[in-house]
Figure 1 (tube, helix red, strand yellow):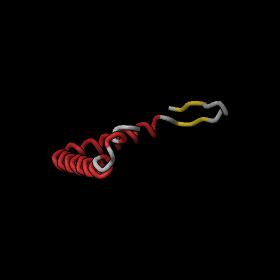
Figure 2 (spheres, rainbow, N blue to C red):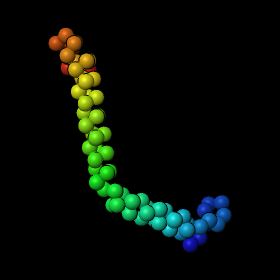
Figure 3 (cartoon, rainbow, N blue to C red):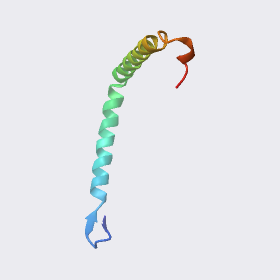
Figure 4 (cartoon, rainbow, N blue to C red):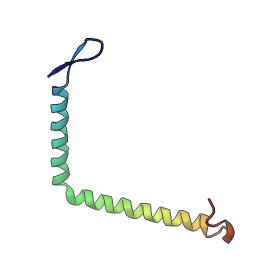
Length: 72
């Protein structure tokens, strides 16, 4: 499929679209094959982020005097 832009130049749109769809299909197949590993990795990342957040808040908020604790 070809289209004309404002400068009267022709360009194709369909081949890039098809190639992107093929790449997405391949990526989805890979993700389906490795769903358990992806879920495990996501859980690990989520837990490490929670741990970091908890440690950050403990350092910053619990050592601050009470009146300034919730002010932003």
